[in-house]
Length: 176
Ligand code: SF4
Image 1: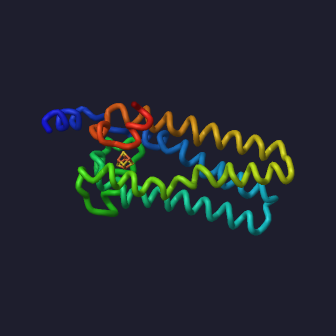
Image 2: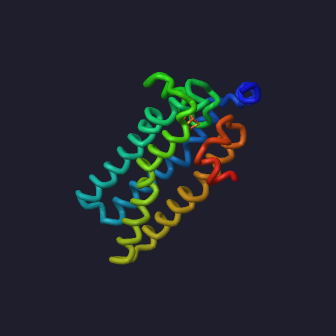
């Protein structure tokens, strides 16, 4: 417990600039995903609605994490949360029991996983149906950002100094 308190005190406090920078890969993923859906289906009415729905899902997914995961995190209500969700969450919901973090994380992270799957799945299906270089570039950019840059930024910013490193399912699967 004492070690946990010492670690918590030593955690880095993020500036607004750092928080904005940490959110860029997620924002880029949502915009690239929406663009992939719209372009993949030739900006039809359905594709525009699909892109808007994906955009809303991305925004709602962030709120979902703030409501159902952040309250159980050591960074809740503090500027030590690298992406700023912890501070926003404290304005929306009450603090939860930190011991429940691993269960809450495992239960609620799957809610946002389709955000990583829908655009490449729809983009590849559209490419197979009618090839388009611009769409291929969008799908590749989405994949590099969502599957390489975003996890690297998350891991670099949050896992190293997190006091929940030992009990976090994300840490154990990505940081070893
Ligand atoms: S580190 Fe993650 S779980 Fe913790 S408050 Fe920030 S966004 Fe929420």
